Image (cartoon, rainbow, N blue to C red; front, side, top):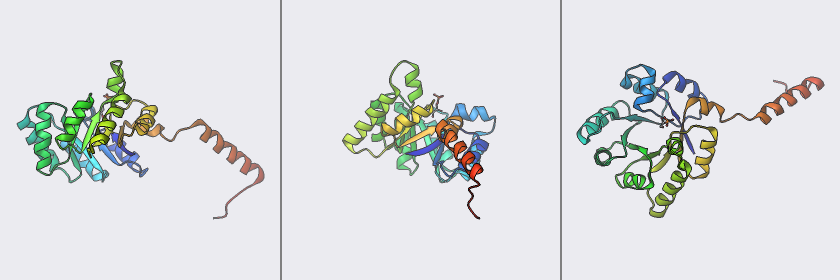
Length: 218
Ligand code: G3P
């Protein structure tokens, strides 16, 4: 599974990219607003940190506006993916941008049929928002499983990008459900390697080594 960071904060991305385990980044207008910076400038900096895909979301909701903004965003760096919403206008923009050579991430996906339409419109990524589905008492992970089944039934190559991840368990469940990518907020990404038994085991190894003066010559 590819792991993306779900943030527009360049400092956060720089810190975690040092692990060598960040395969890409997703941003959206709300995440961009949190930084207080110019969105295009942030995207430029993020693209210089991460060589994998960096999703940049359009603000327009009409076809012409999405096309203009999408084309401009795609020019920021070669690894930009343009994010458009799961709407009819978004589908038209997805097809036009894809035909023009851009890669498109279709976002705000809440149903398997939206995901099927996005795949038919040529989307590179589909972003089902699992946390927000759970928020309304429905089954976010079930959405991932349904999309996986539909894509596999028909051989759609669109990658399933599990978004709106709220916990480490969401990442595990999305991997088990067959999502291709999880996009993860930085605080959750940092917890992916945490386990109390690892800490306990390390402490025991260190104590035993100290007692018996076990060393490795370097
Ligand atoms: O990747 C989408 C994400 O940024 C939305 O997450 O937690 O606002 O639903 P959330």
